[in-house]
Length: 342
Ligand code: DAH
Image (tube, rainbow, N blue to C red; front, side, top):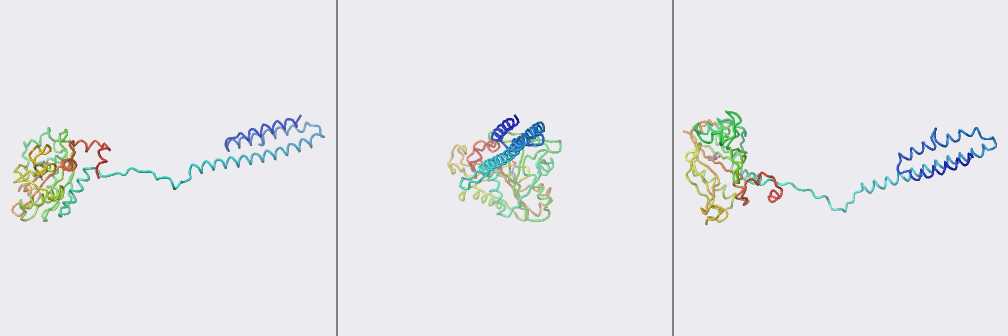
């Protein structure tokens, strides 16, 4: 009777051990069959009821079954551990012959490419980089630059005001004043001020935010010829050694005299084409001799020093150089567009 039960137990245990899919399951089985309250122990507790002559045989059988099951547990545990290790090895081993993972390399934004080029040209001429805040006071953005109080640029229609006194700067020219204030009375002043500017404008050639680079030189004896020579050199560095420029009379409140500066059309070389509207010329910046009132506002005596200034639009130069006809492409961050620039 009892020998038969041991046999059934053995069969059950063998099958369960063989079917165990993992170490936790195997540990549970071990408790179930061999534990203190396990099946074998419970069964042997009944031995007391057996007739004495049967006890040695049943005892022997029970002991050898316990030993056999313990061995089976051990072997199954070893096999499961090896299988897990093999899986881990497959998953983790490094195949040094596989091709590497290709990372996408970042690159400079086209406007940064142009900005860096502009900065390199002027720092090479001895200009320092100057900065100013993007939220600017009416004083620096207009007043100190000799704008009359009814100048149209001061209108809410054209500028982003954040309060009656403060607005998003509409140009980088206020940095002229800040740069002079920082340096006066020392000479010479030679700075460029690259940065963001803001205007209420939005179409294919105007964005509410765009970039300018301001230039300012102040010293004794600076003439209009210095301005022209500097701008010609800039145009040749930027657009090629044969590049020609042309200056047309213009007006800005903060310069006198003032000029608008054209380069010979980089598409047709001056012959006239669609890009230059058949004129042969492309406007690239505004410039002039610093107005005496502006020098004074900056802390310099216009009886002693003169200066020139210029301001250029970075997007405009980038559009010309890269042949881009919609300025909004610079700000929509389409990778197919951005990936074309180095
Ligand atoms: N601030 C002018 C603008 O935004 C550009 C400019 C013109 C700057 C002439 C200058 C300058 O420094 O001399 O339209």
